[in-house]
Amino acid sequence: YPLAQLGLLDGYRAAVHWRWQDDFAERFPKVIATSHLFDWDRDRLTACGGMSVLDLLLAVLSRDHGAELAGAVSEELVVERIREGGERQRIPLQNRLGSSHPKLTQAVLLMEANIEEPLTTDEIAQHVCVSRRQLERIFKQYLNR
Image (cartoon, rainbow, N blue to C red; front, side, top):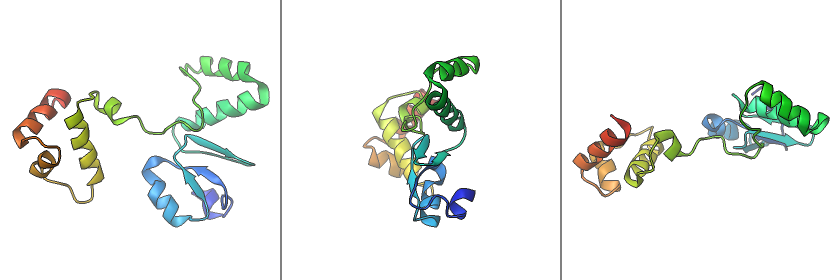
């Protein structure tokens, strides 16, 4: 986090990768950490990482040289669409799982929320109101695991 370490983001919004948000917020309390793809706060531009840097580049091109040029660059790079800075970083859980089964979604959310101290399969089943065997069948059916 070089810009934050130098104090150059104090009092500014900064896009921070979802995986590092808690650590960043703890280390740099004067920075307004967001979960945006990118942030353009006054004279500071930040991107959360990965492909969001390209999204930020396209936003700068659009602002400084027009949407037509940004669209042409996007097409040349085979970018399906130009994403806005405020869009969410993470893909919705149902899309990541490839299923919208409510018990599966509840179980995975519980697992993600308890990474540090994992719940047992029986505990997860109890929380989502199914038997352990039913939970195992759901995982096998929808995730092939």
